[in-house]
Image (cartoon, rainbow, N blue to C red):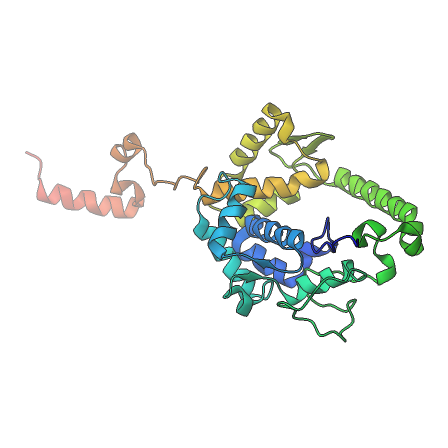
Length: 308
């Protein structure tokens, strides 16, 4: 008996320039890191099911809040706004979303690349033309790979059928190590911020850089960013299980500060005009007159009040 065909994916490919793509930048500018986080959670729910997810927006929003946690998102309306905005900018297909179907051309292009050898039924909600090459894509959430680069675990076939992918694994690992080492060296060269805040991580600590601090203060000019980061530092120190890697703590810190800003924490108090009462009482308009003006005034006073 043949083994049933698995429609869902165990994992999917992601472009390293994901955050630099136009649609993702639009989503970040509109809703901050929490918007991208909501989109990423939904994307994984879709790929777990296949190339589309049939679910009502309300149910999907509740699922997203359960996964992310209501500490970061207070109500479903915020998630629904993000879902609608994703459809507006093309990350989800707007027409299918109105039918409670979550998918898009980009989602299906990536799915086609990963499951190229799987005989999955694509008769429902399939947006791609059969003749269109699966490797060509301009959608921000897709990546460009050839079929021979898809690993055996992604397609469910034997390793002998994909010798190119298996042979490239050691080389890719070496490239990844070199990239990580380069990022570590670059992070050492960055200037630490004057606040001197360090965020504990499971593989060391991240000292907040001046560039990162300036970016946060520019993004949230009405809040005291330093206090928010200090709170995060204490939280991570008290909860080691919440600590991530140094390479990912910046994104976590951005999300933390964004949520503090949304909740209205650490708002800057408006400056109030003040004056010294003693200085006010001890001053006189006569102090600003020169000698000639003072002499003229004294002459007039003398004429009005002649001496006895």
